[in-house]
Image (cartoon, rainbow, N blue to C red; front, side):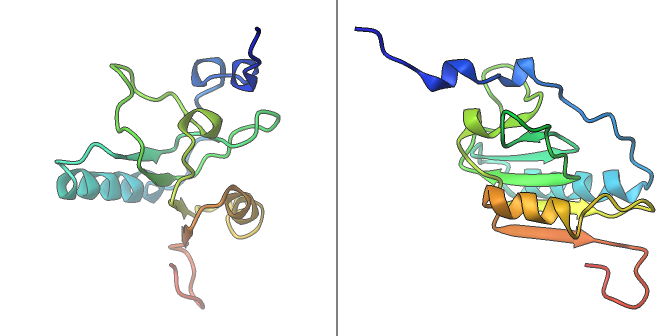
Length: 141
């Protein structure tokens, strides 16, 4: 008897673009997530059940383009898949929603307080941090 597998119809990480090709316009957009990833790598050096992506697309819906946070943390997933590194983070393959998403706001806001926030909430992200170093009247984090 033929068994239908809906996963076979969905694109894999190899089929999807690995970047949205949007350049960063603020050095902090690379430095802060990179620093957080380095701290986690030192603190959890003996653990292989976490992944921290930097400027990596998260595919949450096969009909939508990826959403690309500055950084995100997923727990309960392998840091390295086989011998390959992840090209992107595909929810229907990983089966684990990131627990934390970090956005560093640059000169050009890209929906960090509106559109992206709503999409992360729909995905089920538990913690969403927005760091806006240019804020003067409100706290930057």
